[in-house]
Every structure is written in structure tokens, then in C-alpha cells.
Length: 315
Ligand code: CP
Image 1 (cartoon, protein in one colour):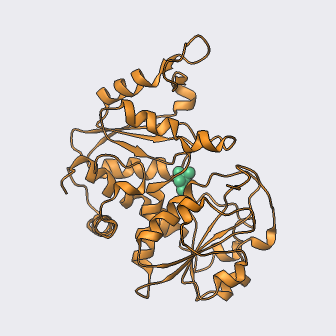
Image 2 (cartoon, rainbow, N blue to C red):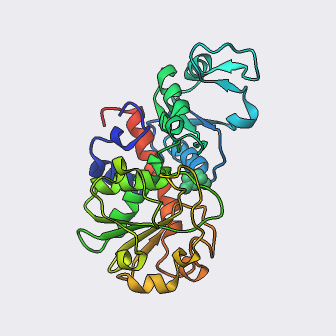
């Protein structure tokens, strides 16, 4: 593995899932990262991604440097040929090259602006780091993808499934803020590669990018979609069609005990953070069907497996 910027970087998903589960079982530090440094740059807030990736790196013996790039660094210019006479003090060409002197792996979180779809899909920040860094780059959630979260989700389902090919439902839920499509995009992507029956349910106007959903069924009747589900992944996203807009605050889509009752006693997943009683009711998050904490714990082992592959590409 040369970089981990999207799920295409995984050659064999099942192999990587097994590697992560083995690392979880071993519960011990390895020395693949001894003498190596991970540099993490956050242009947006994080709890899980930041701490689980730091923990994963340390379990591998790495040193870790973290920077809140939006607050603590020089404002970066990403455009080639820019005349830098305004507020941007440093070009990504130098920044990425310099970071590559200090770090053996660079990891970056940069959310979309959700105003210009074409611009967000160009993934300027992530791609610029990849273009100008001379070390591997890891995506800690970009404008359109969250592959570390998706690998975690695949690991969690693989670990908890009771049937060979479970029914997995990705359901939209309401949220007061406009959120990116990165988590659902990557979840759909990884589930299409896994041995599951995937169904997506969302209100009209919230269909994800058809280049990502491909032939996965999209059902606009949530209850119909949830029938017999073994896993339900609850997530909000803003409209892709009417890009970045909140079209609905329909609380009848909040995931409740009544919705859970329609499923096959499903395990309930969410990437977190979750807005209680808006996205998922307390009664669901606090019941035995919720696996959100188990899922968050797996973030460490997903990150550990990916970092290890980048440190020892041949494994
Ligand atoms: N799920 C996730 O990425 O959490 P953070 O935003 O807290 O990192």
C-alpha cells in the first residue's frame, strides 16, 4: 500500500480486516513503526480519528506530531501559479515537502465547503498533499471520503455478523447542520466490496452520488428498507442533488425503538458524534443493540492495520 486516501488503495479487503482483528487480539505493541514519525494535520475538528490514529501509531512504536492546521499553521495556498499577495503565507508545495522531511507518513483531515460540488469533488487539499509529499498520505476524512471509518465499519460488521451474508441498511436521519457525504460514500463503497446485502434508504432529494451507489438499491420508504435488517447504519448527509442543502428535518426519520422493531434485531451503527434524539433516540443508543462504542474502539485497529501496511508495504 503506497497511500490510504480512498478504498481503492486496499488490494484485498478481507485480508486487511483479518489483519486488523489480529492486531486487536494481540493487544500488544509491535515495532513496525520504531524510529518513524506520523504527522497529522487537522483542518477540522475530530475526537475519534485524532485519538484512535494517534493510539494506533503509538501501538506500532511511532512518534506522533499533531497540528491543528486551520488555527496553528500558516494559511496555505493550494492553487498552482497563485500570486501570493493576500492572506495565504505558505504554498502547499513547500509545506508538503517540508513535512515530508519530518514525517514518514502524513495524515490529513479536510472537510468539504459544501457550496461548490465540483470544487469539493476535486479534493484539492488531499490531492495536493499527495502530489507534493514524498511520503505516504492517509485520508483522515476528506471532502468526499472517510476510508478509515469505512474500514472500521467493515471490521465491525465482519466481527459481529451472525449470518454469512447479512442485510445491511444505510439509513439517512435528520440533523440540524449540513453534513458532508463522505461517511455514507465510503460506507457504501466498502459494503459493495463486502459479502453483505446492502440497501440504502433516504428521503427524496437525498440520493447519494449515483457513481458511488451504482446498482445498490435506494428505497425512499424507510420502514420498507429496514425490514429484516441485521445491521442498520444511521447517518445524516446533506443533499447531493441540491448540493450541500438541508431539504428536510423530517423527524419521522429519526431512528427509534419503533424502527428497530421492524428489523431482525439489528445491530445499530453510527460513526459518531451523534445528536441524541435527533439522529438516534436515547432508547436505541442506550440499548444492547447499539454497537457505536464497539465501532469507535475498532477505529484504533483499522488505523493500526493501515499504518502498518504503509510502513511495511510488502505485508
Ligand atoms: N467518526 C469520526 O470520524 O469521528 P471524529 O470526527 O470525532 O474524528
